[in-house]
Amino acid sequence: QFIFLLGLGSVLIRILIRFSMEKFWAVVLMTLTLAGSHNIGIQAGTAMLDVCLAYLFFAALDSFLGGAWGLAAAEFAFYFWSKSFLPLQSLLVLVLILGLVFLAKVFGIRKIVWFDNGAGAITDGRVQFRKFVMLFLLSSVFIAGPFMGKSLRYAATPLFPFGVGSCP
Image (cartoon, rainbow, N blue to C red; front, side, top):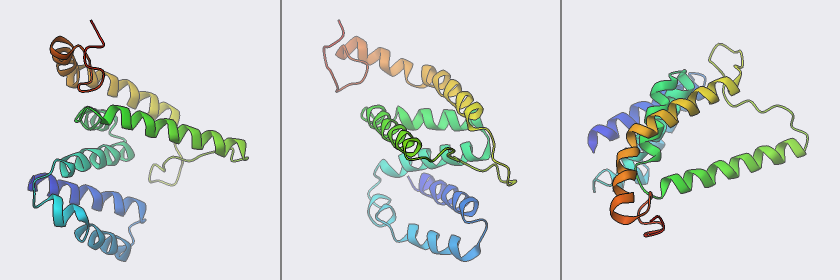
């Protein structure tokens, strides 16, 4: 638990440095905010799984922003399949983001910049996104496949506890 907490702290500091354009005080203030959060005071002391999940999500984000597509896809696949409700929740968030993108285009925002490659030039996000999705799907076969098979066999559903007995 505490190893994941240390990893979460270091990954968040890397992301903060990336987004703050290496401004020292911005990183210090955000690090202090993290140290005073519910995450540290409650969850780290009671060994709750949320610290591990937060680490996986932010590690995937850091790897994605750093261009390590394979690592980002594997980390996100572990995050995505770690709890039975996360696939449904993540798909709902994706639908909401796509809805916001649609609304932005309706109101005249022509180009949406998702990330900067660090050198000041905006990269073509479609290529990276396709690569990420393909690696995520491949990782999911190996990460979630065995558990989904076992869930289908014993509970007749790929995502236990949702739809128990729905698949013959």
